[in-house]
Image (cartoon, rainbow, N blue to C red; front, side, top):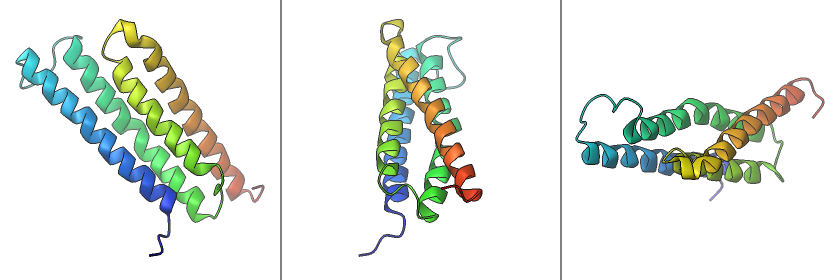
Length: 132
C-alpha cells in the first residue's frame, strides 16, 4: 500500500484522537458541574473548554502546513518529529489547563505550539521562495 502523505495522515489521525479526548474531557466536566449549556464562569469547565477550543484554533493550520510541506517533498527527515512533538505538546496543554499545579505543562504546550506554527510557516515561505 502506497500512502501519498504518510506524515500528514499520521498527524491528522493523532489530531482526531486528541480532539476526541479533549471533547470527552469537556463532557465529563459538564456532568460533574451539572452545566449542560454554557460555561461555569472561569472554573474547571471553562478551562477544559478553552483547552479544546485552543486545540481546534491552532491544529488545522499546523496540519495544513505539514501537508503542503510534505506534498512539496520537503521535511522527510524532520517533519514526523515536529508533528509528534506538536501533538504531545497539545496533550500537555490539555492537562496544564486543569489546574495551577500543572500550569507548566500549559506553558510548554503554548510555547511548542507557537514555535511549531512559526517554524512551519517559515519553512513554507522558504519553499515558496525556492530557498529550501
